[in-house]
Length: 316
Image 1 (cartoon, rainbow, N blue to C red):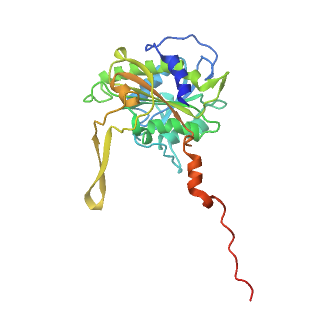
Image 2: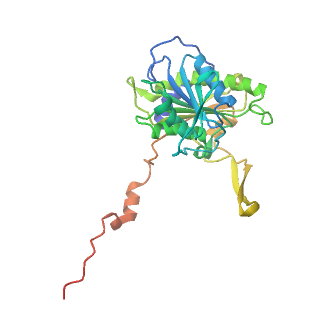
């Protein structure tokens, strides 16, 4: 999605930061009624964030199938599992399924084999991730990777929304009661944001941006104290530094350190720091359409032509 299109998205969400209930209307992504949603995450299908989102999306009237890794799969990006995958249905909730695979695998498996017969998701929703996914963290995020997988590995593609949230207090675990209340409030806001932005995937009543993912990040503050919602570009900073150190037995162990690299005022990290919910449109189309093609062609020059066939020795 271009940032011209993103401006239309901003117009849809500007000036409103609280959810509004909507009466039931015809279904479909380009309508305003109930959606078929494939819900996933990378923290595990029993994690507090994804369960809060499941509750609030169902409460909003949507049909939700939760398919996610059985265990934490953070940092999976868009890794796909080619071997056999086992599934575990949650006791008392057939619409919640854990798999022995990655978040991206969950999206494809859920859509092609576990979804109710004759139906297909209108939207992939991934999250709520336990911690923000901004800047260059997008490249390794399993939360974002799962949503992007829906745009690249499904045919026709299914657009997505990836949701991440910072905790109110870094010292409080995500599954602590106080943080669970915060996640419920964030999930309620996500249900509203979904309602406000779903039309951005459409034009004239049909989905035209099937390869678009909206990456949404919530700052570590109560929903009632949000500064607003901003459509922003992804920053270039990672917020962390990764390095390897020698470990036992000839191994190397990764070490992660937080960094304080400044973010630009108009990117996701900068807006998050000022208390805004950030919405960053991402494209599942991996092509760089702004690359200097003519310059590349000039530099390749004659090497772009097929090589001349080798000549054999002339007959004596």
